[in-house]
Amino acid sequence: METYRVKQNDLLVSEGGEVGKTSIWKNELEECYIQNSVHKLTFSRECNPLYYLYFFLILGKEGYFKSIVNQVSIAHLTREKLVKVKCLVPPKEEQDVISEKITSLNNEVSSLTVKARSEIEKAKEYQESLITQVVTGQLKAPACNPDVTKRQNINAKPLTINT
Image (tube, rainbow, N blue to C red):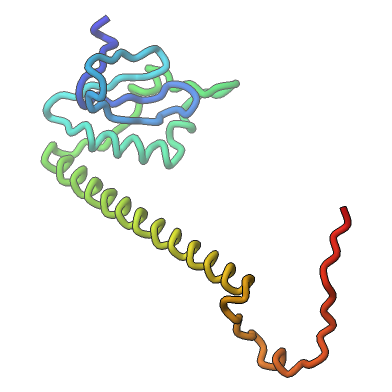
């Protein structure tokens, strides 16, 4: 049973469905075990699991895992195929630098994404406010075409709704 127990910094790799989808275990539960649809990769101290997480995420994003699996109905990344995946293995120190840089950039992108979403939300609220003010007559909409203000005879008819 210990073979299936997940430990801190193990990589979990999806075997079926979204093949190669990878995550890192951070002891979110006191005790956790995998089933046969998940591969567990445990690394020695000479390896940075975060580096391999990023490496596997790139492989998945680029379609590598899909290219090596047989798919009749549901794709399966078998253990035999997983062990044949060739990884770039720089020295541990370099893995650490790469991982730290990617993490830093990810954090920066996440922060910018949150700010951008907030600004978009504010812009939508402002747009809705302007529309409400124009529709209720609180704000006069500027004419887009100066010639529109010169037209005197606009035949406006009340809207009739038949129910």
